[in-house]
Amino acid sequence: MNLRNKLALSVAKLSKITVKKLHLGNATSLPGKLALKISPNILSCFTKQVKKEIITVTGTNGKTSTCGLLASILRADERKIIHNSKGANMLTGIASALIDNSSMNFKINADNFLFEMDEAYFAKAVDFFSPDLILVTNLFRDQLDRYGELDTTAKKIQSAIDKSKHPTVILNADDPGVSSLQNNNGEKIFYGFENINFDFDFDRTKETSVAEISYCTCGEKYAYEKIFYAHQGHYFCKSCGNKRPAPQICADAQISRDKSTLTIKYQNQEFVFHANIPGLYNAYNVLGAIAAALILKIPPQTIQEGLNNFKTEFGRSEKLTINDKNILIQLIKNPVGATEVIKSIDTAKEENTLLIIINDNYADGRDVSWLWDAKFELLKDFEGKIIISGIRASDMAVRLKYAGVDMTKAEIIPDIKNALKKSIDITQKNAMLNIIPTYTALLEIDKMKHTL
Image 1: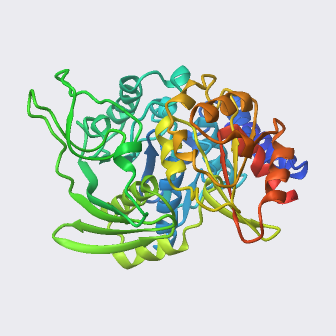
Image 2 (image 1 turned 45 degrees about the horizontal axis):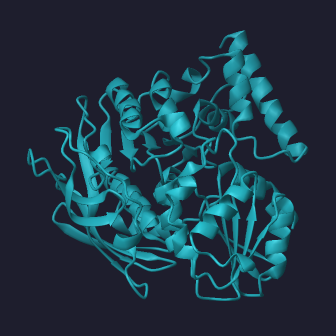
Image 3 (image 1 turned 120 degrees about the horizontal axis):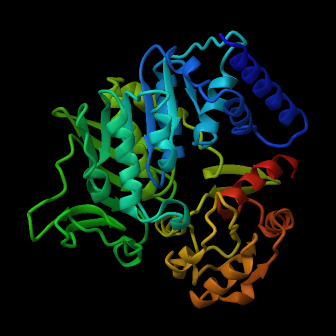
């Protein structure tokens, strides 16, 4: 092991100790950033040591939750895994996760690496390791200032697949952009929903889904037999006949506000799985994780054990209790994801509170025009108090006004810490405080929540 690598490892481990000691955060990226600065090839010291599969999850929405669900299933299968569990999904976050789990002699003990991958950095990561399984969740318009339009993001993911050696690629059949990805080096597996039913008082998916128009490769706009949300569903092209591929792993879903039940058909067998996380978007995450687990030949009873043991990652349907107040934190970052989160909020209870925090830092995306595409009109009948915070609190307030929200129930508190304290104070005991922040706001909340 060369001196540069040893120095990189020592500096990275020391930086994590320092960050933790000074309570400056979780050190999910800084150690890797420093290590890669000192030794750009340090990842290669670790990635050859994995005993079984290297698994990657990428896509616009659901990466962190899908990875968390799959991690819980792998642990239920008694596998030792290394996983960038906090959602730091660029090279720096992956390097930090590996360094955190290595000895000073660069030794790692892991059956699987499970990496959430940022779409834009995925192809670069494949220079250091070749994934055995690549799971792609979905493709939505997200942070256009960083990623560009959907075809740009799809090309970046396709490049990573092309550079991988003999991967099994697991694709969401219900998303036209995902299902069109190719795998010339290995096997391609599709998963998707056949039918979705809701336990809500009425089904709001068709009239409230964000309009995401998807086009076939021939240039014709896709038509749909079923739309589940946005452009996800059963699509077909009237011009050339191209259509949604038949998934090898297909499911029916029963969706409640706080859980879902999936009936899955695979290899002429039927399995029923239960997951205690809310929303249709999370049902897709559950199905993706189950699909990967089935491909890895993990028994259904072990998969269910993993789902039972799953604890939400921070900000992804994360549930807390502070001062007898129930808190649900759900990250928002683009129109489709925000709309699906809003659908899961119970607007009818006056004792509930809603805290919306919008930042426009680099990791959030500088362009907040996406707020106008998200269906905040779903909040116009929210009966409780609404607190608005963050760098772009005023923009969010204007959006709510135009959505028809009663602004006499709303208050702008730009400082996030003060807004969080006020929201907790005004929420009644045993009621629900819904917090929907953008990414950097979520990081600030994560630092604060243990001190309240």
